[in-house]
Structures are given as structure tokens and as C-alpha cells.
Image (cartoon, rainbow, N blue to C red; front, side):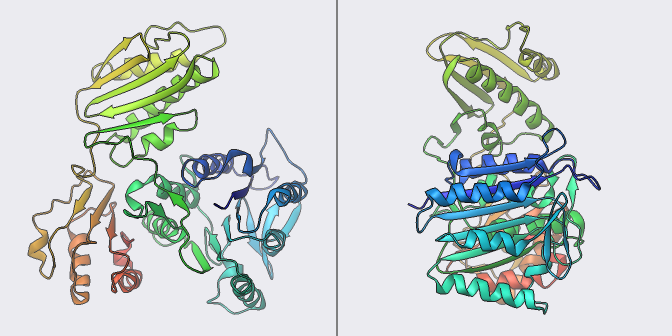
Length: 463
């Protein structure tokens, strides 16, 4: 198995136009690479320059990280490079590292010297796609096209360039999510319904396509992320989380300090957005208390129907519902705030034992399996050629995303536009529709093209 290495850079403390939230993007990506992409913590190098922790010579630190990776790199390993910060174009694509203006090509040259099987470059900055858009002319584009082909000719399996915006476009960020491009790439990894059902994997292309659809919906086409890839064969980037403990009516996952988000983003978990945030704080504080205060060797969360059971394999008993605030710890405040806010909806119980049990029981179902999930529809008809066949499937208005599995269904190409129009008409304008087609379906790629031709279908994607 190849080893995966990464260098993740974010710069926020610019003297002019400082950025506020992009250092969080690196931390979230770091967690996601370990959770979904088989990266080991020690193989991820992070370079985060922010107001309280300025790094002056960022490129020199990058070179040091690249040298450390090279010392452990074996032929056939993979490398990922990520940058979040200011970028611009001046005859070539530039990444701004404080006073240093470094061409993107310079990073490529350092990392392409490694005997990589796959290289992934994610550039999340304004005008980041300018230097790699092959649709436009220019010597830099020709150079990159030649470079990518050379990688393939040299027996590498692939090079993948992902850019958050195209020529002369700004990359959008929000106070809630940071960069929206990175946010939706991460959301794609968390979204288990996007993964190939048999292979249980997710490709870079599918992640990018998901992010593009979300950004088109959010920015009304004012930001157009760019993707370019040259590869041989199939490259699985992310892997579906282990579902061996997921039964027909329950999910059970072992968590660590950084595992809470993976649990809460499981697609069958029917939690209102605000409650999810509050419960994430509750669960994060609990896991931090149990691990960092040397209480627990393991914490498991089981969600079934309307109940959440937290199994705490502690060396000491710890009841969050009656615990008193210590001089140095503020986590108990979070528990009290959570319980006070939801006391009319949640019953709590603590049972001391081996393990200790922390029980939360809600007044409504919060967990759906894929079979019972109203946001996931399996169409079983052998062939669809009339809209009347779709009327029996309820397209719920409560879903932010609706996954429709048509992989077992034959849909004539001449019916596709009728099908797409039906979906647009019968759903809300802020709902994303994900159509899952058989990967061997001869119409699959053409359906993707049909969707890209008309902005009316910006809410529909095919995977």
C-alpha cells in the first residue's frame, strides 16, 4: 500500500487584506485526511501563519517539510499539496506568502521530483485557476499541459489540480465555514451517500463536482472552481468510514477528540442544524474531558432511533450531568448550557459500570437508516420513460440534499431532460439533487454534460 504525504499551508496574517478563518480550513482538512483518506498524522505537515503565530519565511519552511518527506518517500507513494491564502496572476500564477510572491510552478517542481504515484494540488485562492486553464492560450498553459503528460509518460498514475476559482474571479469565504470551496470538498468527504456503493470509495473528481454544484447554488455562478486531471486507471481518494457496526436501526462509532465531526456528518443522522452544533460542543467537551484528563481509554457513541448512548471506558467515574466545575476546566458549563436549552426535549441518565453509560433520550427519532431515510430514494423500476412513474416517490422538502439511486434503472437518453425538468419542478430551489448512476452506464458521462449545458440544472449532479 502506498503511503500518503501532505503539506498544508494557510496564510491569514497579511498586512493588507488579512484573512480571518482559513487557518481553520487547514485544521479541518488535516482531520478529514486522517479520518477518510488513510493519511497518518505524522505524514501531514501543516504550515499555518496567523496573527498569533506568524511564520515569516513560509517558503523556506515548505522546503524543509518537503525535504523531511523526501527522506521517507518511497517510489509509488502519494503527495498532496494544499494552499489557502491570497493568490493573483501576473504573467504566471502566484501564491502570496507575506512579502514573497511564489509562482505555483515552483511548488510543482519541488514535489514532482518525488517518485509519486499520484499528486494532488488544491489551490484555494483568488484567481487560482488562471494559470492552469487549458481552454485559454498562453505559454504557461502549454507548459502545464506538457508537464501533466510527462508525469503520465514517466509511469506516474496521475496528477490532479483543483482550484477554487477561475480566471479573474474571487474565492468566497464566510465567517461560518471559511473558504466555501474547501468547506464543500470536506462536506463531500463527510457525505457518505456520495461514495461508490460497491467500492466504498470517493474520487477527487466527484468531490470537486459536488463542491462546484454547491458553489454555483450559493454564488449564482460568480465563482467557478476549476479542475484538471491526467491519470491512468482509477484513483480512490477517500474511503467510506467503517460501517461494520451499523445495523438496520443503529449506528455505533468509536470517537477520539477529532472524531466527533465524522459521527455528526453521517448522512442518516437527522439532526436540525442548530442542535447538531450544540450537541457537537457537548460531545467534544465530553471526549476532551475523558481523554485529556486521563479518564478514558475508549469512548463509543451509539445512536439508535431516538436514543444516544455514550459508552465511557473510564479509569474513573465521570457523570457530566452532575459534575462540578473545576478551577481549571470549563467543560461542565457546556453540559449545563446544553441540558438547560434542551431539557424539555431530552431525558438524561448516567449508569456507572464497566463501561459507564451516558444516556440521552429525545422526544423524536433522530436516526434514519439508508432504507428509511426520506432524503435517499431508490428507484426500482426497470425502465423509466414517463414522468407518471416518478409520482409515487416523495421528494421531501425537509432535505437539504436528495440522493436518488437510479443505478438499477434504465433511463432512455431522450427522457433525461424530461427527468431533470421533473426534479427541478418538484423540489425547492435550495435543494441539491444527487443522481447515482451505474458507473458502466453508457449515458452517465453524457448526462453529466447535459447538466453542465444549462444553468437551470445547477442543482443536479450525477455521480
